[in-house]
Length: 118
Image 1 (cartoon, rainbow, N blue to C red):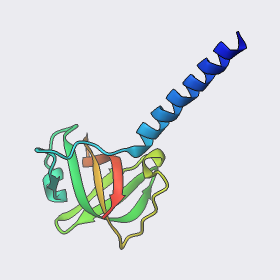
Image 2 (image 1 turned 90 degrees about the vertical axis):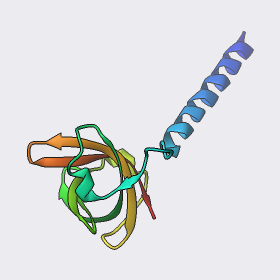
Image 3 (image 1 turned 180 degrees about the vertical axis):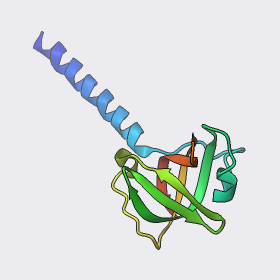
């Protein structure tokens, strides 16, 4: 009887471990239609439109918001603490962010799903 519990417990731990590993790997769709766009283009997109942007995080604005810029302008991005995943960047490092447009009264923002150095 104890052996059944041990086997069930081991199986449960393996499943939880696989689930956590899958969540930490991140990533997303990078096939046709998933193209990198500019900040200027992102400012004109509809709410919830997917975006991939490359540029620099200029500064922290507070409350998980940052000013992101490329050669065409800047836009406010929101990066939840869990999205960072231990990554550290400064204002001189290029990053690629993958997220979606969050249309606000003052203009579009980007809710970041993944971030990586490039």
